[in-house]
Amino acid sequence: MITAEDVYLDGRWVRPDDAEWTDLEDPAREEVFARVALAGPATMDAAVTAARRAFDDGAWTSLTHAERLSYLKAMAQFLTENAATYGDLVVQEVGLPVGLSVGGVASVAYHVAYWEQAYEGYPWAEERVGVSGVHTRITREPIGVVAGIVPWNAPVSLSASKIVPALLAGCTMVLKPSPLNALSLRCFADAAEHAGLPRGVLNVVPAGIAASDALVRHPGVDKVAFTGSDHTGKIIAGAAAETLKRVTLELGGKSAGIVLADAPLDRLVETVPPGFTLNNGEACAAMTLMLVPRDRQEEIVAAVADAVGKLVVGDPRDPGTDIGPLAFRAHYTRVQKILETAQAGGARVVAGGGRPDGLDRGFYLAPTIVCDVEPDAEIAQQEIFAPVLTVLPYDSVDDAVRIANGTAYGLSGAVFGADDAEVAAVAGRIRAGSVHLNNALTVDIGVPFGGFKASGYGREFGPEGMNAYVEQKATFLDGQPFGS
Ligand code: NAD
Image 1 (cartoon, rainbow, N blue to C red):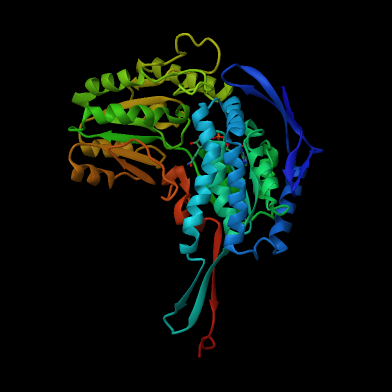
Image 2 (cartoon, helix red, strand yellow; image 1 turned 90 degrees about the horizontal axis):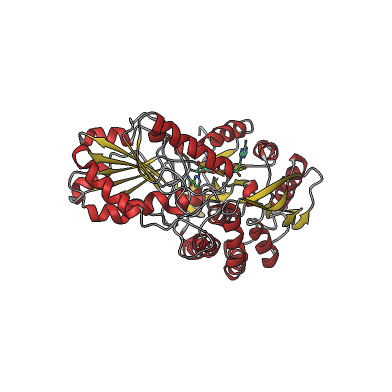
């Protein structure tokens, strides 16, 4: 049994006086394996105070970008060297297959390497002559103290997508992990210590809802960078509005793939199964709706179901496993209930639908394909966050586009077909932050990622991701008095 009784703030490990304790359960074994302390509001206040001081004293902000990058490189190197240790904790916490868990820790180095080659090209400062002939200097300066609030589904890489640009810009941060990742995300505190990061620049403070809410409302925080559900995103946007904090929201999705009449079956068989089962199906941008021409539905569903049946569901510690258990008990129960409700309403389960044979213990769900539901059904509208694909037939391409755009979300989308021009034209009609042509899902850290509609606002990755951590300042270098 592991016990973690401290959180990391102001360059030290601190045992919170206001700790709330929680047990962590291994989702593959249904065994409690750790007891961890979560910060209460007073400890969160101390963390924000430390981050505020580290920002305001100017030592961190006055470093060059290259100097700050060198700290990030040292952190990334430490994490790469210790990826197996922290990755194993992610496996134990949330059941993510070991390759993805360890790869998530190693991915920090990719974020740092991206910015190592990109930072000099970012417009930190540029000169501009205004329409009046005035000479100006436009600078992009660090936004201040950032609250980085992250979910449990890919904890290390989702944290890296905030920490790396924020610290490089000159911000300081309170990273607020989900309670489920109170152990694994200590990796960033260990890396900060290893790299000799100045006190208070990065604080790692797992917390429950009350202290997380206190973090969002804290007047010492300038910006909230949030990844999580649209439910929490709405609460955060409202709470942050009290102090007019800057907010970026990376929220959920119900991403649709439109299969055109001439779409090649082999491409669907290759791309759709990983597109909805990746990361145990707990991926925000997963393609969880498939819209098919009515007269091809049975042919396509049979072929995709056959491919899905070959995926290996099982122990996330086994490198041969494709899909591990769902992350935690309440989530498993919720997903089972959604499937039961759909079936009670007439839905047909053509693959999976329950516990795979031979796995009597653990929160396992066989990859599931559901047909015969209406576009307005819960299972066709809500994010399920599990390996569940809902298939809807359509009668015309206009109909398909309407269904694809007919959920509250707009994170990702896909179009499959044999005619490149038609595929691109249909993709242009999808209202989502990413669209894939003849592919279900790709992410690239050099390319902006984020949502339309209820999938959030703001972007991560690429230079657009840096925009979330800077304020723009215009310095007038000369010019005439106003009105003269
Ligand atoms: P969640 O919204 O329940 O929690 C996310 C984080 O917010 C956690 O750290 C949680 O402790 C914290 N939190 C909860 N209530 C809070 C409050 N009132 N104030 C401040 N913080 C609060 O989400 P989750 O279940 O952890 O994660 C799954 C969700 O994340 C899914 O909807 C998924 O689509 C989304 N997600 C989005 C992206 C993206 O990039 N768009 C990536 C991964 C996950």
